[in-house]
Structure formats: C-alpha cells, structure tokens
Amino acid sequence: MNASGESRARIQQMRDKAQELQAAAERAGDPEERKRLQEKARRLRSQSEQESGMASGDIYPAD
Image 1 (cartoon, rainbow, N blue to C red):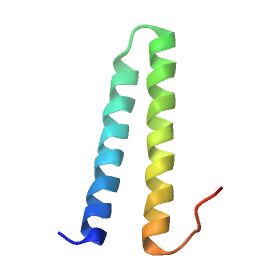
Image 2: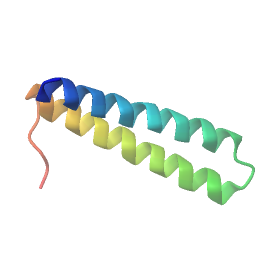
Image 3: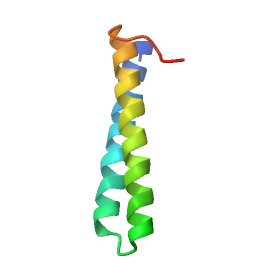
Image 4: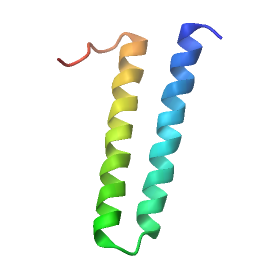
C-alpha cells in the first residue's frame, strides 16, 4: 500500500473509532462518562478531518 492509501486507511480508522465512541456515549448511563466519550469522539473527528484535508492538499496544518 502506498502512502496515500495508508493515510486514507488511518483516517477511516479514526472515523470508525469516533463513531464507536459516539455510540458508547449514547449508551453511557453516567453523564460524566457520556461527556468524556463525546469529547473524545469530537476530537477524533476533528483530527480525521484535518488529516483528510492535508492529504488532499486542501488545507495547511494549523500551528
């Protein structure tokens, strides 16, 4: 697999994990646990979007 394919696979894995975390948050009975899982899912989605944009050349990394 080339670097582009590896990047796409990593981005998809992050998106899948974010979905899993969101689903776990919806099932969580504890409000604090729900909030923690939702925040973790949000960060993963944000990171995957940033990497996706960088891989396609659409955006520059924010420093």
